[in-house]
Amino acid sequence: MIDHAVPRVVFSRCLGFDRCRYNGQTIVDPIVEQVKPFVEPIAVCPEVEIGLGIPRPPIRLIKREDEIRLYQPETDRDLTDLMASFCARYLGGLGEIDGFILKYRSPSCGPSQVKVYHSAKPTAGHEKGTGAFASEVIGRHGESAVEDEGRLRNFDIRQHFLTKLFALARFRETAATRRMKDLVEFHARHKFLLMAYNQTELRSMGRIVANADRRPVDDVFLAYREHLVDALARAPRRASAMNVLLHGFGYVSDQLGAREKAFFLDSLDRYREKRLPLGSPVSVLRSWILRFNVEYLENQVYFEPFPQELTDVLDSGKGRAVD
Image 1 (cartoon, rainbow, N blue to C red):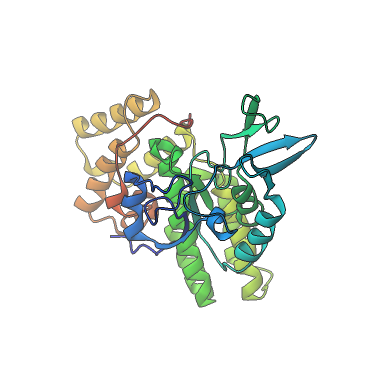
Image 2 (spheres, one colour):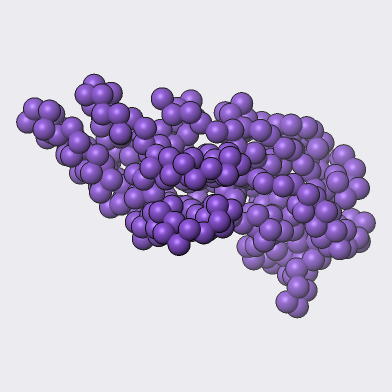
């Protein structure tokens, strides 16, 4: 059983926390509701924070020459500077944050797929961009796990987001101790996870932990976090995940019968062909880890990167799955 950290997560307040959308409503999203009990939630509505009422006339992003402005057409108000001032004050005072779950396509909160209009006219054409608040989030806290509730309905995107979110939270709690032995343990428990994500970074992080140059502990933790963020930047590819599972399979294969081995290898083939989710071969291997009491693998975060209660097959197909 993995002892999971409690991530600090900033949510758009309209995602089930308050009726603060422009139309006075809230959005109750099943994925968000599932995540809330396992994190320390921090809710914010940037539009309300800059003085816009509930309900309020809608706002939109408008591209003027090479600059994107935040505009409220009905009142002819340019809110760009007001939002920038709020973002600097709010995001600068947050402290360490592990992740953000923001409102899909919102002109303030949307991390992507936000309409950026070519003019203030109602019939103006548009392109895709990033919300005013979300843009500042990415600029100031881009190393955190950042997503919107729409894309989190995609199974692969959600798996990567949750894996990164809880890994960053575990590291934050580990770094708070300032003890090298805790960093050594963290690295050992995340070896399979880092192997799946980025083997080059895994090797670099191993050298940092070894600390042959006897660097001060704070410098070691800082350097390690930089590489951890780089390692978790992109979801692992199927070939990497299969390599890790085959590596784990080597710990138990001698104790398995021919039919059990064939079943596992067949499940890997079906995962490679996108006919099975990764969780299927992982669950099979994990059952053998418990059955044969392989303590080293039991302690590997890879086999439970976040609380099991957050594993859900719900998938809207939004976003793009990992190859």
